[in-house]
Each structure stands twice: as C-alpha cells, then as structure tokens.
Amino acid sequence: MQKSNLNDLMKRIQKDRDEMAFSQIFDFFAPKVNAYFIQNRIKFESSEDLTQEVLSTVWVKSNLYDSTKSALSTWIFTIARNKKIDFLRKNSKINFKEEDIREFLYLDREIDLIGENEAKKQIERINNELDEQQKIMIKMNFFENKSHKKIADELEIPLGTVKSRIRHILLKMQEFLR
Amino acid sequence: MNGTVVKNQLIFDFASGILGPAKSLFASTYLELNSDASKISSTFENMLGESLMDNENIHPKNLKYTDCMNNENFKSASNLKDPVTSFFGNLNNLNWNQVYKGFKEYTASIDDVDELKLIKMDPGVSVPMHSHAGKEYILVLDGSFCDEYGQYSKGDIQINDQKIKHTPIASKDTGCVCLSITEKDVIFFGRYGSFLNLFTFIKSFFKQK
Image (cartoon, rainbow over all chains, first blue to last red; front, side):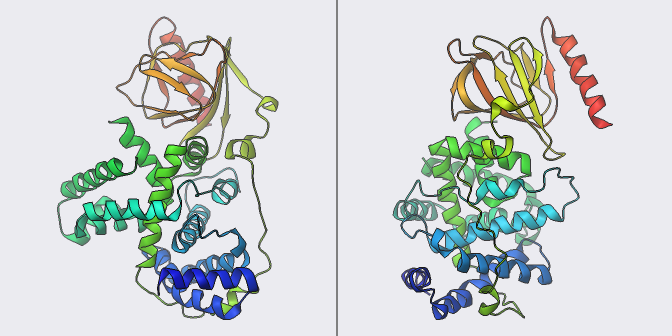
C-alpha cells in the first residue's frame, strides 16, 4: 500500500471514526507489527496480545498522530517499540523497582523536530550510502535487536566483521545525521 | 572511544528500545533538552519505521480489527512534564544527601544495572580529580560546569570512561544540576582520593545488603 493511501485512511479515522478505514490499516499493519514482536523473540501468544494493544492504541489515540510530523509507519513503530519495552521489562529477571517509569518516558515526546520531508531526504541519503548487506545489518541490529553474534551466525560471516561493519555504518550515519 | 560515537550509540539504543529504565530516563531527558540529539533520534526512528513498512507479514491467528476497537481500558495519559520532573517531582523538595559542602546528590533506585543520580553543585564547587571504573554519563539539567575537556551547559552530555581523569568545577554564577548514570563506582585520585575510595567502597558494601 502507498504511504499516501495510508495517510488518507488515517485521516478518515481521525475525522469520522471510519471503521472500514481502520480495518484496512489493521490489515496492512497488524501482520507487520506481529512479525516485529516475533523477530524480537516474543512468543506467538504474547505477540498477538501486543499486536492487539498496538492497533488499539492506533484506533483510540488516533488524534495524537500528526501526518506533517512523521510517517504513519514511524508513529506505529514507536508504539510497538514501547509495548515491547513494557513487555520485556515485566518479563525480565532484572529487578526493577519503579513500576511505571516507562509510561512517561516516550508517550508524549514530540518526534516533530524534523518534518517528514526532511527525514525522508536524510533517510534517502543514508540508504544511498549503504549497500544491501549493511541495510540488513541495521535492521537485524536495531529493529530486530539481534546480538552481533547472532547476526554473524545468520549471515555466516565472522563476528569481527559484523562488529567492524556495524561500527562503520554508525560512523557513516553520523556524517548524515547532522 | 570517540564521544560522538558513544552519544549516538545511546540515542540509537534508545530508539531501538533496548535500554534499561535508568538509561531510558536519562536518554529521554537528553532528547528533551538537546534538539540535535532529538533530530538524530527522529531520523533513526523514521528509518526503523521504514523497516516496519517493508517488514514481512506474520498474520495473527485470532485477532480481528474489531478486537482493537472496543478496548476501553486505555488511560488517556497525557504527560506534558519533562521526564525528570515527572519522575523526581520538584527537585527542591527532594531529600538531598550532602556528600560534602556544596555537593549534594540524590540516588534513585530504578534498576539494578545502572545507578541514576541527581547531582547538585553550588556555584564554584569542584569535584576532586577522579576517573571511572565503568562508564559514567553526565547530562547538565541546569547551570553549567567545566573541566579539563571543556564547558558543559544545559542539554550537554559528557561520557567518561576509565581513561579519563577529570576535575569538574561548577559555574561560579549558576552552579550546576546534573543527571548522571554510573555503570560502576568511581575511582578517586589526589589528596582525598583514598578516603573517598574507601567511602565508595563502604557505600557499595551497604548497598549489597
């Protein structure tokens, strides 16, 4: 689906609480969000619950989305990421002493300092600089949160190469993210 | 390690959602105060959003779109305060612990991995030269301080590792309030060094209980 279509659907949800528009947003994003949780090593039963929470947030808090400030996929990604953090935290062996610290961390942080167009340009520039394997590594490292060791195993390359390539990517990105 | 690399690593890790609670609170305050850092984070979040757009599909088995529409137990939480104020409340009302004259700290127990601390230095007050056993992250919330490496004002971050020895001094005019994350205890040098190390050691001993 085109980004502009997604934005139109989102507008219909915001203005008219259009259920059919929401069903299309759901059909497009629910399987991708569900996959994101599974990629992050969350079991299927839980991933489905979390997917429900993410899409419920999209429906209930649709008015918080501003299309001039970020792409819809970015907004939904941040919601999914925050749900993942909450989930991992509740199921972690680490002893967390404050119950609800996550709530105020991300919810209303305005990711609007750059408009979507500026972000798009920067991403295009970065994407042009990276080859296919580097892009895959970024996705594995930061989207799927795989360890360098795991990335090395899956791509069948030495661990040292993964470390140095990711370091190289970060340096490259730094040049552009200024 | 290059400071910029470490800073960006913090931002990327925050955007990916892999930081513990203490570091998350630290990072989100950093993004709140520092617009450059916030831009980097936004761009990175947009990149990860693109990854979501192109992600593979694994269809949920028992979930329909209508299941996502009658969920009434959503709090409409709206938190417009900055993370530090939401977490600590009014800083003036905290029960600060005076370490020595003009230097106070307040330690928050958020997680077992990192120690999150607020530090308040009166104008002109300095910290004896020290280095760090683990990494230390310092974010200036108010006022400024300087050390051998430069001046740090509101929204600036300094990341110190084992190699760095420094003597921070709070601004003579404003003093300085900082948020800090310590991965391991600090090692002190100089006149009061051994005493302060002993103090740190005793403190850590009691903490383990």
